[in-house]
Length: 633
Image 1 (cartoon, one colour):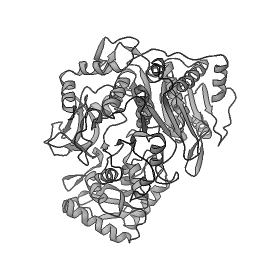
Image 2: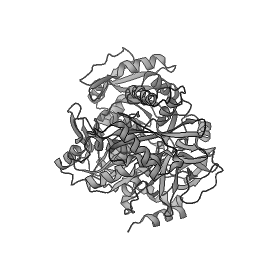
Image 3: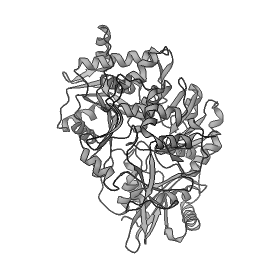
Image 4: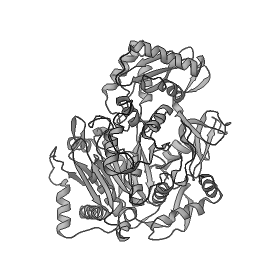
């Protein structure tokens, strides 16, 4: 039997007591005066307490006698490089790097931008910043110079840490020229850049400003220098993570130290059911929130082993790479995006690669980052023969808003639902007037304030924008900007972003519901539905489908069958009359489909190519596909 309902009730009855109990899993330098308080009109957790996140993630495991336990596994199928680090070795790397940063003048409260690929040094850098009480801001390696410059101007870093290059399948991206361009553009001038030289590219260092990563660490080691952990307030920022804003100006989501550590530790026990010493693999990138929470901090706070994977789910070298990693390292739980599984399913629909590897260590697959369509979940269940757990959260929250808490005993899975609200989240589905809608009715998904530990307390240097972006539309609630409904059992269904709910002749329809129907076509690997402007009905939906590998049928036949499926499953009210077969969909590098950009192309609106796009050439393919149907021309 699941202990979920009693656990959730215990939180609701005594939120402060619940989180004070959870905080027992964290080492504190100084106890709190208040578990929760409103400070300057904003929510704060563990007020008055002091701690150090790096101590909790690294040092305390060594102090407890677990220094020889494996902390980090690095696997790069692109380069063939592999490495492992015990907690003792991780402590040595992090404390030495932190000492080298101290020698460059880094102190508590300073900001440091990390512009890094998926290599262990990215983790060392994040933890070294946390050790010193400096605030890191990870910017996805390879981000365009103007986008990097806006983040430099907003966070005003003292130091930028980077690598000479990032490596993608089939190409090497030199980072230093991009960084130099960004520094030329930026109004804020940094004092130093630290460059980790990879063997594929040697970056040119600018005398005075630029420092060789290994060089400064070698100097620190030569003097026997290792930095101690600097205590910080629980309410002090651990990091800033920029997320795209609707205005094009990025929003700096702030994550505090205390609430974050408590929520991360609680989630590893209760959501993911991972024990110290087990191998947990979040197949993401440190540039995204999943990477911050579940590649770096949560597994290490738990004393587990984490994997840094520099590769892709397919093509490095094939659709079996995930299974190879699970088999090689005895992975207990895999956490990735549904996009990754759709890509694997497209290349290997019969799961032929799965049988080639020993996956007996794998207990659970967790999916998040976008809506997990039932077809993908069912395919993964059938192929892997383990529970497939969808859960839902955001950059802003840092951990699950809704999920199926495996550590408390699994609840029944309902395909298409990320299950139920986690403790700390009072989820309500509201209409435009802010009133709760009946169960089963589509509405705006909101969280009643206060938000739990780890959720953003504000935006970097911009309390007003924080209030306006998240708290103003529905007073007393945090607006998630996701739309969906809740069923009679309290299960949540995320159907779309609120701006992806389309209004067809007065009927509010979810693009997610239509995508689910299209994904059920036996030849379809991936789908996207957007609403485009229509003079008669206001908006009408258009569907895009990517076919599974090996499908040789005429595209027009499949398009016609997809339109018929929508009419049969949803009805004529959906008004979906156009489906286009495309070779691929435009996505961010984390795998999110760029529906808003596709809609602007269809509506002939001006748009800026998103900074996070994986391949800008796909936008021309979408424009051509729409043009073939007489749309957007």
